[in-house]
Image (cartoon, rainbow, N blue to C red; front, top):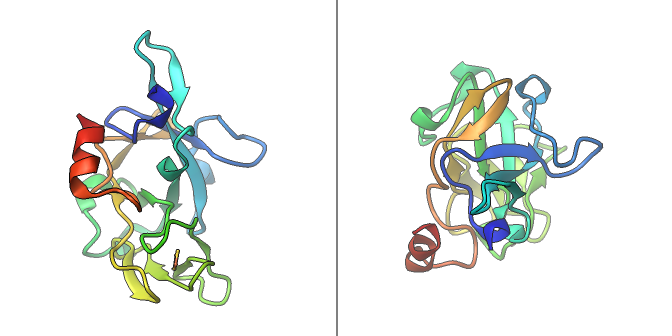
Length: 167
Ligand code: FES
């Protein structure tokens, strides 16, 4: 169903939690801490659909000073320091979170997987085998819009399952 399709080009990112849950993210609210988001696309009748029927569609969004964002981040998918990734750990699929004791990193609470969100969410500690896939975005009408799909599958999908999901 439309609510399970991964983020694709043209989807709008909406808050996944908090008092504005389901509303479009405002770039002015973003920070160097995690903002959780769902992609919102359209069903076959053109009606907006928040794609939260697949929990692995959860995204995390940040805004950093532009100069802090470095390789291997795909800079074509970043605008004005806003960068988005899958919010699901590549080890065994838990939700990643902020790391209060090391704020420049993000941490998976399940087995202490650590990622660097300024550097393409590469793995910097713990068991995750792969970086968090990046979602290319652009800023649009004060919000955030996907310009493509995640750079790779979220946890639990093979590359070929992933490609068939996006067809
Ligand atoms: Fe994230 Fe194991 S599920 S480190």
